[in-house]
Image (cartoon, rainbow, N blue to C red; front, side, top):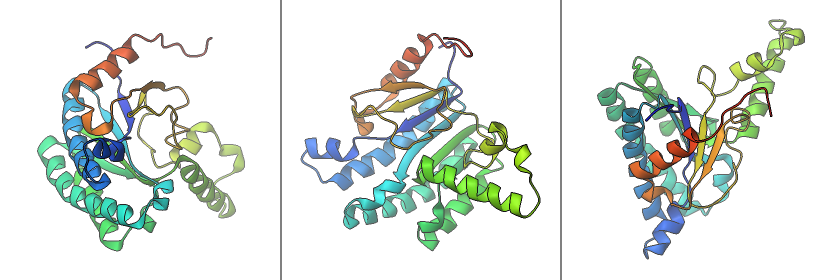
Length: 233
């Protein structure tokens, strides 16, 4: 496939509705959705995509029923262990985007270990947005910049788009070329708003657990068929 997007970001939507359609509890959908992340990582790497970012848990997801939040946290902890092995096997660097301070100390430790161990790998780049919200990310970036200015390490004259980007969670990661949302909704839901300023958007009715290699290829083909022009109309 020609013109493969360097960075694909996905909003993993529809796990609960998918489970309900099969007469199963919502948590079953989340479990199957987590398994699908691993498959799509492997497929994306083989297709030549260099960066894959997935929206795993948003700042707004805390408002879900406590039992569902608890199960999601348990799943994430389990996934971090799996991801550690996958990272080594696939030469995959893993980074977590978002404010991890609200997560349990154990999950924070797992995240830091995963990031530290996988930092040496330089094959595929996988980012997990966890307790992430784009507005929250920008507010946190502004707080860091303000502290630097107050400490005299930075002048407001130095502030530029490039500098602001360097204070975001995605510092050092290229902006997504393609943003995919599964399961029919057509909005970004506070996901990578700064980074997606020039991204192509692709929406599909397929729920995340059913999103497979054929569906990813469809999304990439739609991207390839678009006329990418910058600086013009």
